[in-house]
Image 1 (cartoon, one colour):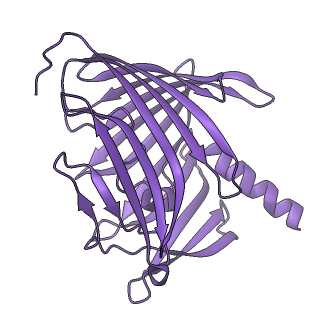
Image 2 (tube, rainbow, N blue to C red):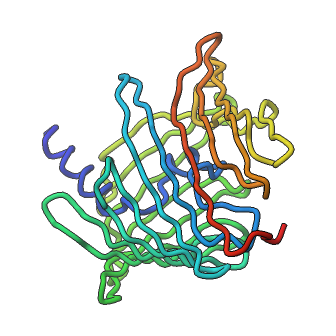
Image 3 (cartoon, rainbow, N blue to C red):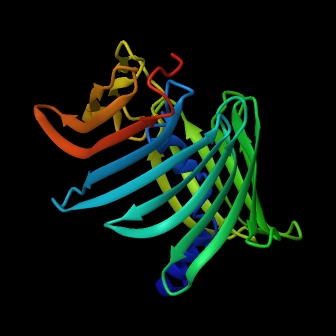
Length: 273
């Protein structure tokens, strides 16, 4: 039974590996993973190196290369521990949302595989995500539903014919600052259930004069633990950060989460502010 459950979970999460899930919504709510963000239109390229630290004490290395084609497109590459793992293209709308991704990624046991992701937004929320193969043939799509306050409450994965394959839900209890996260198969049978935190309190958050976060209270963390995330930056003369140190503070203990450096190449020496 356990083996079967793990198989179902693997299939579900591997299918929507490029999708926003309800837990990832809360994890990425502050957009700190958007390493390509800039304050100038005249940025030509960014070479980003990330050293991430596991709680075990080991670390990993990522390298991202972002080539800015114009205000609405980025072409780039991603490396993990020195190995090329992805070639990608991002297309943006006028609000800065990624509306199309083309990922040519190296997958274990499968080699290189192309996935096209098309996204639709409404009132700042992702409402539809289509997955297409390298020949632009629809593979599946995900619909996203939100409550009146904008919190995600349901994600439904459908095949190319519109048939439901699986779905996940969130039932919120804002008194305890938690939600019940459940994953179901196409028959509505529960295959996973866990309780997660969702603390929307932002009163502890702080930004510096560049409007970058320097203190964040993470919404997915148990509020009773009093854990805060701290960020230290270095900037170039044009106001773009070139180094970010991410620390997790619990009491008097600070733990390194990542150190990120960005080499920023401008198309001229006087980028628009």
